Amino acid sequence: MNRILLIIGGGIAAYKCLDLIRRLRERGHHVRVVMTRAATEFITPLSVGALTNERVFTDLFDLDDEREIGHIRLARDCDLVVVAPGTADLMAKMAGGHANDLASTILLASDKPVLIAPAMNPRMWLNPATRRNAALLSADGVTFVGPGVGEMAERGEAGPGRLVEVPELVEAIERLLPTATMKDADGLLAGCHVLVTSGPTHEPIDPVRYIANRSSGKQGHAIAAAAAALGARVTLVSGPVAIADPVGVLVHRVETAAEMMEAVRGALPADVAVFAAAVADWRVDRAASDKIKKGAQGVPKLALIENPDILKTIASGRSGRPKLVIGFAAETSNVVAHAREKLRTKGADWIVANDVSHDSGIGGSQSGVMGGDANLVHLVRADGVESWPEASKSEVARRLMIAAAGAIGKSNKGR
Ligand SMILES: Cc1cc2nc3c(=O)[nH]c(=O)nc-3n(C[C@H](O)[C@H](O)[C@H](O)COP(=O)(O)O)c2cc1C
Picture (tube, rainbow, N blue to C red):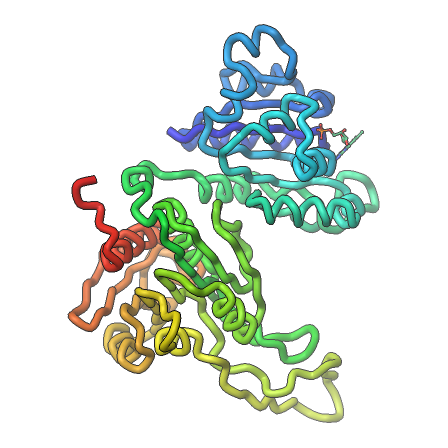
C-alpha cells in the first residue's frame, strides 16, 4: 500500500481534495492529511477526517499530535507528499525554506518526493514572484501538475491557475508512487547516469503552426522513472508533452529536434542513453517569422530539410559514446525487419521496436500505442530478437532498465 501525505492549502479549490481523498482510497492508497490554518477556513478537518478515517493534523504545536507521531515522522512516514491546492503562499514558503507552521515545517523536513498542484488567481500565478518560486521549486526537484487554464471561481477571471481535475491529479500522483516491484530492484543502477529522450518534437512552420506527431511521451517518461527508481541519476530531455515530470529526474524541456540534439550533447557523458522521443525527421527549411496568411499567394509550399539524426550521431560518436545506446523504432508494418535495419544503419546496441499503427489492438484502445498506456515491444539486438508480451508502459520500462543494468555489468544476481 502506498502512503500519501496530502497537504491541503488555503484556496477555494480545497473542496476538490474531498473527492481526491475518496478516489485515492478507492485505489488502495493510504492517505494522511495535514491542513494549513487557511485551509480550515474552506473545508473542515471533520469532513477530511471522516473521509480518511484518520486524525487530521493542523497545528505544529499540538502537544498530543507531537507526542503521538511528531512532525518529523509525519514528514517521513510516507512515499509521496502532495500539496493541493498549492497556494501562492505555500509555494513562496517552500521556495524560501520557511518552517513557521505545520505544513511548511513538514515540507522542509521531508526527504520524500513532492508533487504540487498549484491553484490560484491567474494574476497570482503569472506574478514574477510566483514565477520565480515555481522555477526554484522545479530546480529543487519538486514536480508540478497543472495549473489548468480556464474560468476561475471569481467572476470574470480566467487564465492559468485552476487546480487540475481530480482524475488528472490521481494520475500524476500514481506516476510518482514507487511500485512494489520497483522496490525489489532498488539500487540496481546506482552510480549510473541514464539519459532518456521522450515525447514528440515541434518543428515550426510560422510563429503559430508546427509539424508534430502523436507521441505522448508516456513510454519515454516511464523509462526515466524506472531508471530513477533503480537508483540511476537520470536526465530526461523531453519534447512538448502534457504529462507530469517523473520524480527525481532532471528534466530539460525542448521543442525542436535541433534543440533536443543540443540538450542531449550537453547531458553527456552517460552510461546508458535511451532515445525514445519521436523526433521529427524533417523541419521546414525557413520557418516564416510572421503568420502565413491565407489568400492571394495560394496554398503555401513547404520546403522540408532533414533534421539531425540524434540516435545515429550519438551511437556513432567516437569519444564519449554511452556504454549502451538504445533506440526506439515506431513502425506501422514489418516492425522487426525495419528495426533490424535501423540497428544496422544507426549503430545502436539495441532497438526497441513497437507497432504504433492505429489498429494494432495493443492496449485495447482506439489509438493503440501512441498516447495509450500499454506497449508490445520487440527487443532487437545484434544476436537476436526478444519479443516481450504486451504490458503497461511502466512494466516495459522497468524490464528494459533491468536488462540495461545487466548489459552494462550491473547484475542483480545474489541481491
Ligand atoms: C476566498 C478566498 C479564496 C482564496 N483562494 C486562494 C487560492 O485559490 N490560491 C491561493 O494561492 N490563495 C488563495 N487565497 C489566499 C490564501 O488563502 C492566503 O494566501 C493564505 O494565507 C494561504 O495560506 P496557506 O498557504 O497557509 O494555506 C484565497 C483567499 C480567500 C479569502
